Every structure is written in structure tokens, then in C-alpha cells.
Amino acid sequence: MTLEILYFAWLRERIGLPRETVTTQATTVHDLIVELRARDERYALAFFDLSAIRVALDQELADFDADLANVREVAFFPPMTGG
Amino acid sequence: MTLEILYFAWLRERIGLPRETVTTQATTVHDLIVELRARDERYALAFFDLSAIRVALDQELADFDADLANVREVAFFPPMTGG
Amino acid sequence: MEIRVQEAPFDFGAECARFAQGREGIGAVVTFCGIVRNDGGQMQAMEIEHYPGMTERALRQIAEDASRRWALADLLILHRYGRMRPGEKIMMVATASTHRADAFAAADFLMDYLKSRAPFWKKEISADSAAWVAAKDADEAALERWG
Amino acid sequence: MEIRVQEAPFDFGAECARFAQGREGIGAVVTFCGIVRNDGGQMQAMEIEHYPGMTERALRQIAEDASRRWALADLLILHRYGRMRPGEKIMMVATASTHRADAFAAADFLMDYLKSRAPFWKKEISADSAAWVAAKDADEAALERWG
Image (cartoon, rainbow over all chains, first blue to last red; front, top):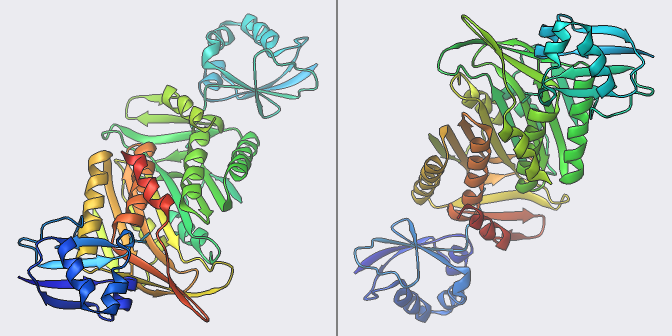
């Protein structure tokens, strides 16, 4: 499966890129994070504390155990601070 | 004692004047209302239902049993509908 | 703190702009504007009577009460009297605070007190009748929210 | 219902005027404006990042949720992204309703949800540092008010 992964705010800064295309066998967000953490130090650091991270699947907020089937766009970001 | 009495909204309309100067021996608002009611039909009608009337003494909301000592201006009006 | 009681129309947008202008220290501005409703097309005009002297005094007391309860950088109360047509602006309040919760609560409080504690009386005028607006029990009850 | 996400500054007064214009049917307009604070003079600029696509979608969901909960004649959400200086307006909401309680509650609700459920992230830039603003527990807790 090929996913478009987006990073925002300090996640974007730590990983060093705003988006990337990833080919993966992960079936849940959690699996995907485990894969990304294993890549290198930047990812391991960025995804160190999951309580500081939110995820959206195809632009809808989701949980870490959400299924990736049919998903095209995954976004990781810190808790939002709008308004 | 001489008082300036003001009427607003439907009280003004029923009594037929916006203000008048009254010489009275009344010591409380209640006494004053009793005096006014005794004057004629217009006053009796205007002051018929006290639950529909509010009073201010020298431009501060007051109760019907408030003392009139040192008061110069008494205003009668219905519950307020500002905003 | 600014309090204005006037017969003339006011420019709601211009007042909002002025009130929010140059506020580097604060983060939140809330404004409220009351507009004459046409109530299904029956009403031709609204007439507001007030008690000159007591009005300004009551509004000042309400404003000072709000300033004691919440951390406000500024507040504005503007209320008209006289005759207005449906769609015309009757009054407005504005509050400025560092935090939005204070600005919202203070504006809400000002409106509740303006409704029932400031000496204004509304009369609705239609083609064939004129009636003083009755105070609503709900407006009096709303004051209890503020303890 | 109008939702705008833009980098350009907006004219708060003009937006308020436009929103309150020609509303004969309704009686109450509430507006909120968020302004960049200088936090004691340390902050030089605020930078807001957002998630194009999801932002509009999230704002629309929040607006529709508010419209279901309260009797609103109209609502506006306008939010900027990019770099702003202290005193500049970040965003605004406006609500119009027949009754003031609905207009106040809906504006308050919109702000609570915009804070924590719309994909914006603020960065504060001072002379010698830049820091992402942390989400406040109080902002998350505020959502519980709405059940």
C-alpha cells in the first residue's frame, strides 16, 4: 500500500520534511508509527511520546488503532492550537 | 415634604403626565402610592397592580417600603425592557 | 470604559473596529449587537423610552460590576432611545480581555443586566396598534446565573 | 454560513458591519475577534501553520455542529494563517440569532472547538527564540461543557 504522509508543526521540523510518500504493509496507524520509528533517530524522536501526537486519516481525526484500509492520506501533528 | 415624581412608559400614559411636583406627608413609597391612588381614577388604575411596577428613589432602584426621608426624586415605571 | 446613551443611529462596524484597534496587550474581543426585529412583518417601528440621568448611572453600575467580576482591559456600552425601524441597531456592548472566557462571560453578563436593570422601555408600533413590550420572566431568571 | 481561511489580514470592523447588515428578521449578533498578544513585549511575531484541505473541512463540521445545536440565522468563521505581529487580528467568528442566548452560546462553542479541533498550530517568535504554543489542558476541558 502506498500512503501520503504529512507532518505539521514540530513534527514537521523534527522529521525535516512536510510530506512524503511511503510504501508500507502496516494495517493500523499504530503499526505505521512503529515502522516510522524504526527508520532513524529523527523519526524515533518525533514519535517518542504518542500522548503529544494526533493523527488524521484522509483529513478526519482518528485513533492510533484505526485501520489504514482504503486510506490515502495520513497526517501527524501536535494537539491543535487554533483560535 | 416636596417630591418630584416621574412616570415612565404605560404609567406615564395612564396618568397622562411625565412628571409632577407633589407635596406630601408620606414617609414611605407605600404611603405615597396610597395617597396617589386616592387622587382619582387614573392614578387608581395606574397603581392598581404593584407587581407590575418598579420604583426608583433619586435614580436608584428601591423597595415599596423604602423611607422617603431626604429623597427628592421618585420615579415609577414598569419592569425594564432594555438591551 | 465607555458608556453612551444616544438617540442617533450608530455604526456597528466602525465601533467594532475602533474598539478592537491597537490592542496589543489583549487577546480577545467580544461584541454584541441588538437589532430591531420585524416579528413577521407586523412591526413598523420600535420606540424606546428611557430615564435620562438614571440610565447613565445604571449603565455605569452594571459596567463597574462587570469590571470587578472579570479581568477586562476595556468595555463599551452603547444604547439608543427614540424611534427605530426593523433592522436598525438598538444597542451594542463590547468587551476586551486577555482571555476569551472573561470577554464572553462579561458581555453575556452585561446583556442580562441591561435587559432588566437599565431603565429602558420598548414599545412596538404596528399599523393598527402600539404595545409596550412586557418584561420576560426568563430575563429576570437569567440574572440568577450570576449569583 | 460562511467559512474563510486566508493569509491576508481582514478588516474586523468591515466584517462586523457586513455580517450585521440587513438583518430585519433577527435580533442578536455576537462577534468574537482573536488578537495576537505581545505577552509583555517579548514576542515579535506569531506564525500560524495549518493543514490546507482539512482546515476547511474541520471548520465546516464545527459550523454545522453549531447550526444543529442552536437556532442560528447565520454564522461566519474567518481564520488566518502565516505570520502576524502583535495587535494583528488572527481570526473572528460571528453568529446571528433571534435570541441572544443562542448567539452567545454558539459563538462560545465555535471558539472552544476552533481552539482544539481545527488544524492550526501557533508558533511564537521572539528576538532570540521560537516556540510552538502548547495546547492547554483547560482548552481541552472546555469542550466538555458542550456534552
